[in-house]
Length: 188
Image (cartoon, rainbow, N blue to C red; front, side, top):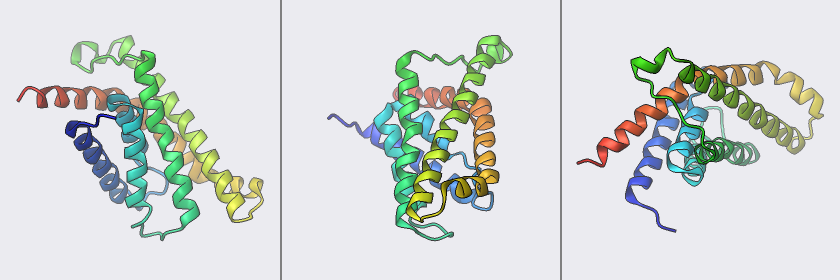
């Protein structure tokens, strides 16, 4: 496997962005930019890089967390977070092309159509992530699943709705902005 220093740098920067933004939003439960950043990492650098960003983020954030450390929760969230990176890589490979966010296309149907697809994808991925982490956590701690899922509804809704809007408003723009920066970085 050939891993370039540019790719390693990208993974390190995106991981730092995830961790920093998580700590910045520590007081807002289940509302984080991390999932979008992991997806963008996978989209721009491939699924493996996205998986690395997701896992490394939880390695830091899950270990040095003001809410405490719990090994089963750490493992579940670390594994669950990787779905965003895998999905990003698969979306890029499947041909989901993003519209440029320039002023000429910002109001165009293509831009908003793609943004809406990203928003729905963010919502769906978050639903899968929340279901996976809630089921595993409920089983590990011996809590009846229906009770565990019901008590988590406010957090789940906050997570899924916020990710819908983060992916909708930020996915297209962030991917295009980072892509431009990466291209300019190669020109020096």
